[in-house]
Length: 125
Picture 1 (cartoon, rainbow, N blue to C red):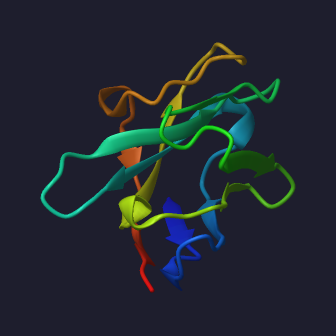
Picture 2: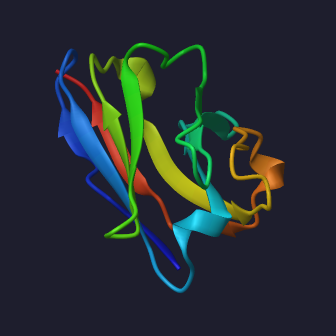
């Protein structure tokens, strides 16, 4: 099970911290991805983290603004979003896929087979 939290309304230039709480599996065997879908647009990959080794990938649109980390003790993955703009407004989803490659992750959504329900992020003044 995946449960996202931390969304809300924030002003441009602000920050939000999204959490993806996982249960029923160990993060050591799964890659975790974050995706978002803005109104009227297709869902797009934002970031991902490998099972181990801390390999992360980011979409060009969020590089140097977003950070992704894992708290294995809490089975939680945290997406720290900084310098937010109205273009970051979307529903944010986390997803997971089991992999034997401890250093692999992807932001291609069709690689993932378990999804959370999403959390709304709105960036507006």
